[in-house]
Image 1 (cartoon, rainbow, N blue to C red):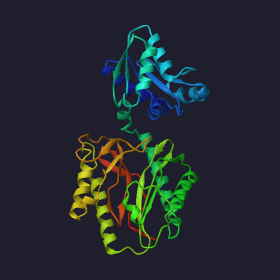
Image 2: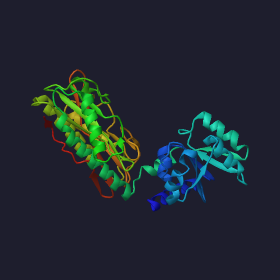
Image 3: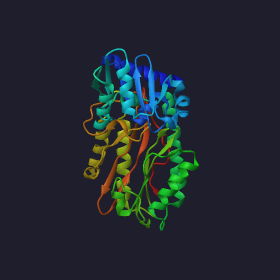
Image 4: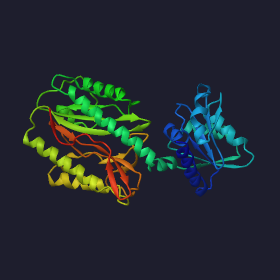
Length: 363
């Protein structure tokens, strides 16, 4: 990762130069890790043209140097608040400073403290999403790690099917899924596991409850694991018993919508294209009104990143994007079906990273 971190800082400094800024203050933990390797819960990274400094507190006096050495980042342990320490540092420089910061990541109170500590020598330049834009393009090493995470998630799903049966509660199934993640080496879940059965499967973001699974109902299982800091995110829908023809038709429609969305992924294609492709299929089945969320999102260090795969998104895909494709239908009073996979976009091809069966499983 030594080369990875230094290359990321190099690309970020190009943004600094383009914006005629002297420094960027990075406060969001995922962005700090991406640029420096630091995993602590308290830190602020100041990236300048010739160096980068991580401000943190005494809890990380040993951890910070060990984690940031490969990035060439200098840790600075402080007893002050982070805004006071960063502002004081910028104000102490021998020249006037144009400091960029992301207003979507810095609170009003923190910005006020920064300005007070920095004094009049520092001017402030709001810039949104610089690091997130870099994160949207995964390196081969990042995609390799995400491939491992996706395969782990697929194994978790396959193993957890053993407990998906009538009489078991949704919470028990969710607990089994998260136990299996840990057992297979994951650092944890990338979001709260969704287990929704029967009529509750029509809730896209249902929280698992004490409801017991019943014969002859749909069960939606949406899980994500973190492995080596990177997330996977996959959904499968199963049926307890023999599925009636209506459910089979619904499932076929969602699967075809997912396939159409995957086929719309390509370098240079608009991020709205997969969403349009999925909706066209579902509309042909007369199910378009039951698709109530976007078709997918970027994936990486966090479970929701850029780009967003939704209607009228003009951003174009690039090689290195990793996204989810997750069309679904949700029929109130009856249930829902969602199928989700992680897909890497390469030059000239795409790669589905999750490999659990997409066929309708009748348990």
